[in-house]
Length: 345
Image 1 (cartoon, rainbow, N blue to C red):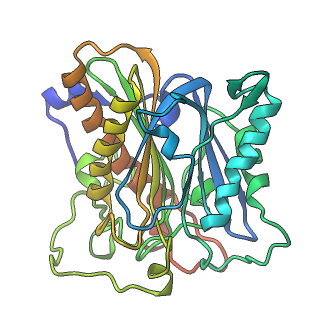
Image 2: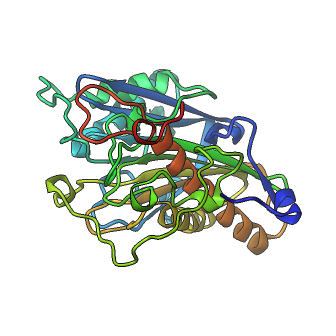
């Protein structure tokens, strides 16, 4: 497990909640259905925020990500949705948008308000839940998640992580935060549903262990004895389009434009690769959104961006491990939980 030196200790520390909501002005809401074994998660700001996105997986499922490019007209968004349900889950953004319209939120077009709600989905249709719904449930889940938005939220088998799985364990919803020595706050939110594994050789040690702070995912220490020739055995859910996917949001209170936000999202992918082996596969839709609330100006653009990108990558690695570590067992699970196998509360 990572034990910082005195120099590193002064460089980065956890936020008060160790959640993405340590970034001022952000809230997260979750809604899920235990019968269907799925759910949705919404991140919303008190006011619209700058956002970017970067995709490295081979099978992404998204809505309104093209408008996040730096050369697009719309420069800010109202909320971001992470959802289970594969393509069905994209409708969670519609439910969140409905609630935003009622709240008077949205991009102004004459007298009309159009909420801008990018969304990414993961595949959880073969996880043991009942998927014979009479109508798409995700619009309702998206609305409920937005309405539940709060500074405090639980991790593990909840929201977009409710039906998530990894190669060998249940996945889940994870989050973590950090404060840099310059006073910037960075956070990560992730739904872990990967072809690869978050643990070394079946566990209990996590790939993300070198970045752990204060035993936040069990304090098991670094793994060893890993076979570099190991390859995951792919099941049917792993070889279908959009069959897995780890989807994430990293956020900061720094003032970034869309180009800089896009670079932050790209840098954060390093954290995903540190925490899941293998990652960014053809069968994953691995994607990272980035959010900048603009509360703190950059003092040195290049140097600050380097440190923010590093902090975002470390936060995302920790958030992935925390999501898997917090997953809870439920009747009908197709994969065991970390805590079932390795103890802990």
